[in-house]
View 1 (cartoon, rainbow, N blue to C red):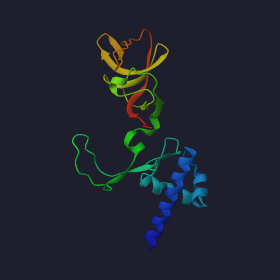
View 2: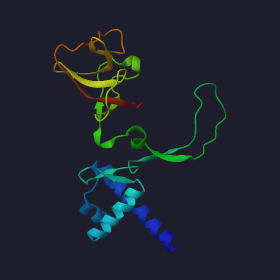
View 3: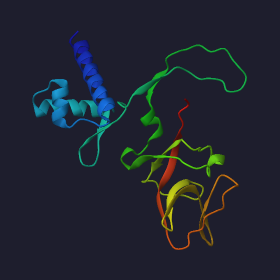
View 4: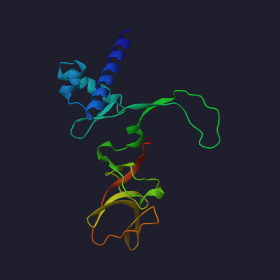
Length: 197
């Protein structure tokens, strides 16, 4: 019985934390977490953070600040859908999954960009999409990268050749780009997010 009370209290605190994150678009400070959960001592807050980190609900970045883990709005996984011929299906709760957890491998080094232009349409990246970019990944030939080329920003396939580096579009309307003097790669595109209205 005592264990279920503890579990209920922990679930309640996780819900409060999730609401705070959703409303404020950031994680609370340790003192805000104390106020949020009704914990008065720093030690109690620290123990709660340790427990939530253990459960992968949150994590700490290099500076010790809290960052969301699976807390970031998990969604229920209900099964598999056939994209070929129709087949009978039953809804069955398999798991829950945070989209952040699925799409972002390196949280501290990742950021989102809005896409404008259609030069990467052949790669399935369309205007209005968002891309997740990981600045911590080492870019390889064939990766889609976000790069600054001679002072202009673009997103293209990176191709390393014997005569240098070239950036290739995924749309025949556009020409390949060969840097004249400078190429800075900001990161590697790891995922595309598209919202249907």
